[in-house]
Image 1: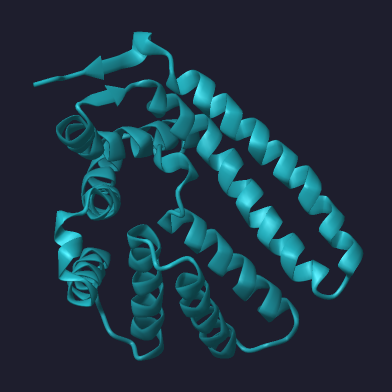
Image 2: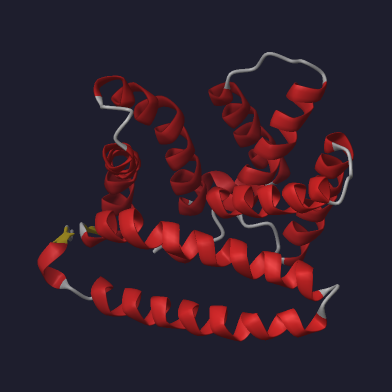
Amino acid sequence: GHLLAVSGLHVSLISFAIIFILLFLGISKRTANAICIVFLVLYGAAIAYPISFLRAMILFIALDLSFIYDINLERVEIISIALIITLLINPYYVFSVSLVLSYGAAYAIDLLFKRMMKVVDKKNKFNEAITFVVAINLVLAPVQLYYFHEFNFISLLTNLVLLPIYSALITVSFVIILISLIFARASVLLVLVDYILNGLYKFLLIISKLEIFKISIYN
């Protein structure tokens, strides 16, 4: 389900694309970061600041400010600050499953994944990818069982295989949009990206209906 959401990973990829292009154009890193922050704020307003986006945006801004002003903060501390700010913006988010899933995944990556990697061969990227997916789902699976009364193990495979593909397509489409501002004909490539994304979405709908990999808990 969260594969097609506006996640922190996608925000990171978009931010990287913006900064990379601006640096390529000769703009200083600090100015590029400032432009990226302004873009994220405006983009977030356009999509009504979903919780996952809000978290990623606050993390990006906090990390950028800590780097500029040489503030030594652990990533888990920044995640906690982002959580507090999110709840200050809207205290009712505390009842949102999106907040639990979004910050649950963030804490899982920073706390559980890093500890699991201490016993995993770091040179093997496939093992690292599996460990990453397992760490997140160890935290999110109980949450999904509690709120939705089911968990589909097929999500482990989709996150491992399809998430990188989807993230790459999102990044490519964003770069095409930026390029099309200068070269209008480049926008034609968006048709191809859209076709692939639609195919990926339909494929996800099909495999999500496979009951053999699903655990259901009903009251």
